[in-house]
Image 1 (cartoon, rainbow, N blue to C red):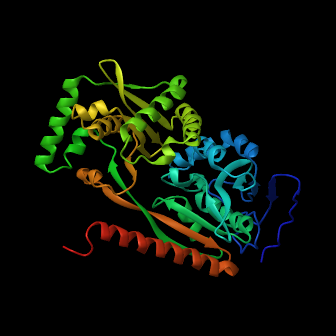
Image 2: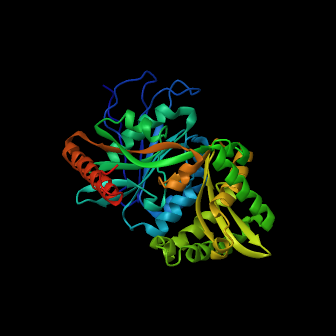
Image 3: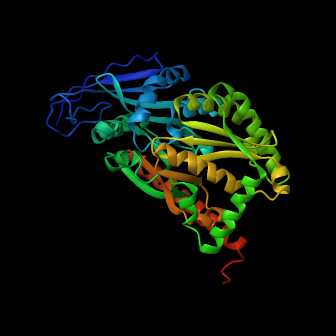
Length: 409
């Protein structure tokens, strides 16, 4: 058994750092926040150091290193960008609850898990981003993903202590799967929200997925859009704050009297979107496209992007388009498909939700995952969380069935 590494912790500091050196030959590692193991392309002895960041300033200072790691993490989504997560924390976080677990190798950030502490009523560590984020994940450097995942799992186990870790809305193939696979304690995998995805191809190829009659109707709608002369423009970075304000106002008008999501009209959501999107546009992780008819703004769309995936996150449309019988969803999809296919990305995500209109395009259904992780002595709490999730799932299914008229054919 490897000798436990000596650690040094400064109680007054909002961060905790640990360092370890271990033989290059893989060995059983004692519980510790650091792991040392051979990595592809590394020297014979390599060192992982870990850190627990618990204050907003420390999280803010991570931006350059976090952005680099985000680009080196192939499966990361836009919701793991530093701009999105840090801005979310400023709008939605509770002081004292931040827990960002970091792993470095040779001073380079190779793994990160952005978490916060809540009570349900026992301690639970959940990922930053909340319900306004469609996907969550950890970040792992692709060049050493397995070793970094093992180091991160050890660091998470130590950081969690008496808390269960609850990772929700994890896409299939995401980095968190590696952490789940090497978790040293009790673990559970559950189904989470369904998402619909299309290939990132031009509109003509998407039309080829439709039945013949539906494709003809879609082409007629596109010809109508062209006849109206609606113009589109990608908003430059220095105009983003005003563009976000216009987008949210159009979103409010679009849903007026029709049950808008209350959070989308909140001050904190507006502040978060303004902060995060400005930085994400600069990093190439977001774009806002505005649509004008006869010079007047009639629609706006926010698209979020990562190395492989992109999708429309939020849009707003003036009711005048409904009056003119414009298919707004068709207009936005054509623009998004053109932009994303030209960028070389592979997936056009329709994000969470199983709405019927999305199925017109015969998308692939992909179900997000939920990972529950705990130390062995916390197994009863983990099972309680899993039971609650199963109960809520059965209740939601019952409500949906009742709304459809029960079990009638």
